[in-house]
Length: 188
Image 1: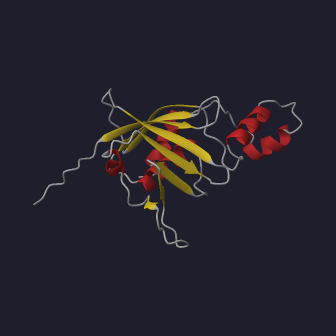
Image 2: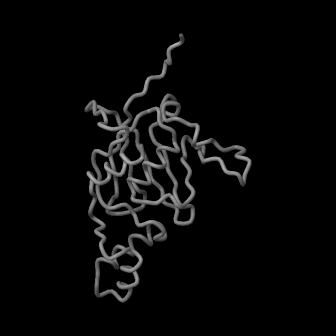
Image 3: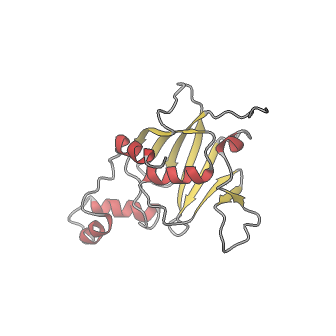
């Protein structure tokens, strides 16, 4: 019986939402045997998004999409079949993730050495992070930062409009690590 030569290992990523200040970031541990499709689902949880929009990963200039019944998938890499172990066997250091092609959210995932020997307690684990993920459908990084600025100023003329859009209970500086990991457990 032939043994599988690729063993699953724990990968450590630091991910950051591009063009948003103060920075929104997470540190993530995942198994190298997951697919990009699974990573997409994980990123949705980490940001608090609902997955209502299209996405793509950009790796060494190639775009990876889920297959679509509306196009022939010609020239595209398939995110459902592509595993992280295959990508990182090619010495890749950074993955780009694009979500909601209208708002153009971009997240950079940097593959960090796991010098601490961290192993996840579950299949996927967020070990650190900062700030609430951007509100979905908020118009992209510039519009999101403007909405946060207005939300934090009850005297602003657009405060009620923005509060209605974002919701009455929102803290842009809050990140709940325990709750995030509970939601990640629900993926499996």
